[in-house]
Structures are given as structure tokens and as C-alpha cells.
Amino acid sequence: MLIDTHSHLYDEKFDEDRDAAVDRAKEAGVGRLLLPAIDRESYDAMFALARRYPDYCFPMMGLHPTSVNDNPAYREDLETVARYLADPPEGIRFCGVGEVGLDLYWSRDFLDPQIEVLRFQAELALRYDLPLVLHTREAWDEMCDVLRAFRGRGLRGILHGFSGTEAHYRKIGACGTFLLGIGGPVTYKRSAVAELLPRLSPEELVLETDCPYLPPVPFRGRRNESAHIALVCDKVAELYGTAPEKIAEITTANVRRMFGDAIFS
Ligand SMILES: [Zn+2]
Image (cartoon, rainbow, N blue to C red):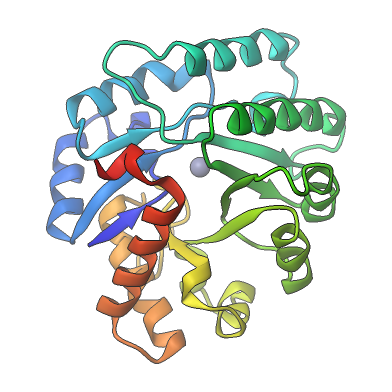
């Protein structure tokens, strides 16, 4: 069984064929989809998908760092996140706090509020004993700095879309228990993460699509979807010189260790 640990299948880009996309994922051997939240604009769509497929789609709760930029109401939005985690809506059980983090790609002007929002949500992950799904873009040094303050407190989670260096990974690994989320970019030419993988153990990885974004080869330039995670698995298997079934088995066991009963009971 494969697990897509990062699927935005509730995105409006799937409004025309969402059920068919779920069917294609199932046919491709994907046994679970984890749904990272973005912000208030899309929580309801995510809840709707989770309610439609309660044993298949598992939602998270969080405020994405780019939704903090130019958002004077970000503290209210954080209160919404806290309220949902304290009192989930009917038929919803959150499997993680995500996706949250730091994103300096668009602007560095909002670093301070992004750090505040990240810290607040890391505390929520600890309070509810949930994994933290971290989005980090052009902010790996800053992410290391924020997480250092959480050392020794039992933080755990996924470094979604990992694009840092081995040194970043080791530094963050000293701050908690973190797995690397490996997606479409591992299939690209001159992929830094593909070069890094052989120096890590498959026990440190989970697979993800980030669909509708970041499609693997040969789907670049098109909409990504959860079924394509099989191509990511194939590439990771090739890098380790092993069978895709082996990578599927190991990464699924890693997800089970990280998320536990929330998605396997
Ligand atoms: Zn995402």
C-alpha cells in the first residue's frame, strides 16, 4: 500500500473530476490520502472531501505561511485553527497540524508574523499530540532557528517538500522526530533531493504528491494528482536499487509510526 501524505485533492482544480481522481489513486495502489489544510478559504472543501471518504481521506488543520502574508487578520485565523483543533466539526478527526511553516519565496517582509504563527501551531501540535507537517520554502536556516527552541519537547512531523541540505536535515532532526516528505521533484533532472537520498535511510522518508502542484516526470506542466505517487515511489526505489514494493512497504510503515491510530484504526 502507498500513502500520499500530502494531497490537496479538495482543491478547486479537481472540482470536475474529484471522485474519478480518488478512483485513480485507489487503482494505483494508494491506500490513504492525508489532506494538509491551507486556510479558511478551503477548510470547508477539505472537510467535505474527508466526510465523503472517511476511511480514505484524513484532514489536518493549520494555517499556511503564505496565508499569513498581507493578512491583517492572521491572529483571528490562528484562533480559528485553535478552535477547530479543540472542537473538530461533525464527522472530522484531525490527523496532524499542517501545513504550517515558513515561506520566504514571495517576500521576506512577513517573516516575523510567520514565525509567530509557526510557533503557535507547533505548540498546538504538542498540546494535541499530533504530527506537524512543515512547509519550508527558501527559509531552511530560519526553520532550524525556530525549531531549535522546541528541542527535547517531543515534537514530531514531516518536512514536506524537503529542499534543504543534509546539514539542515541533521539540525532539524536534533530538534524532534522528523521524516522527509519526498515528491515529484525527486524525478527531476539535477534534483538535489535525489542526490541526498542515498545518504539517508528509507526509514526516514514518506511519499507525497502535493497535488495539484509539483507533478513528477512525465507529467510536468500538467495538473498533479495522488495516483502519480506511484512514479515517485518508482524513482525512490531506483535510487536505492530496490523494488518499489519494498519502498511502499517501508514508507507506509513510517507513516504508521508517525500518525498511528488516527489513520489506521
Ligand atoms: Zn501543500
